Length: 191
Image 1 (cartoon, rainbow, N blue to C red):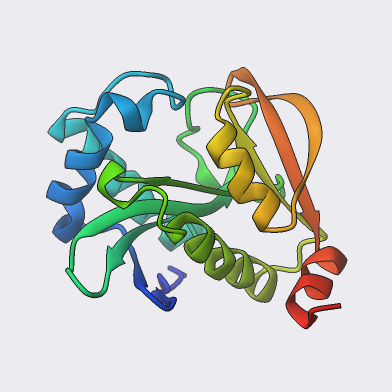
Image 2: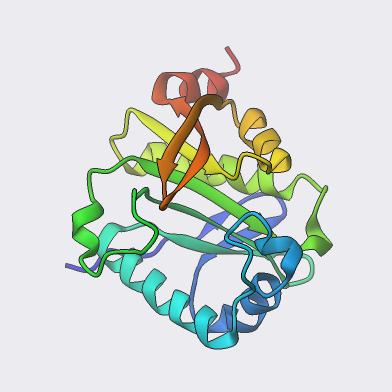
């Protein structure tokens, strides 16, 4: 039975599950070298972005989670994108999405450079982490980043994550960060 895609709201953002309405904004962001610098380095074509949107819609239907477009509420622009999804060791996504269920859940994000250094990644990450811990019975939430992506590491720190070390994910070695459910609940209660 297909699962419902969930829209999230933060103070300045509306997180909408990827769909065709987001194609132009997502492609404008994902074709920028400074955005993909730590994400494989290859700007996306419009067709690649469209293909990603189709795959993400399959993920939402299968898992009940995947990627959101970050819509800045004051302008209506795509400010970024983020996800709660299952991590995988291989670079390529498997055709059988069910095969990833049970793997650790990952939180991730990227922003259009026009929206850098405004706290939007941290704001969206808090909303997505809350979704993950409320929706799934997970003991912990992971985040991965290119070891040189210091800015993403700072967002992970602000989220209350700590670095676990270098680990093999997505066919490469990445810095892996983690927050446990207990740590998340402590940060939420202000303890």
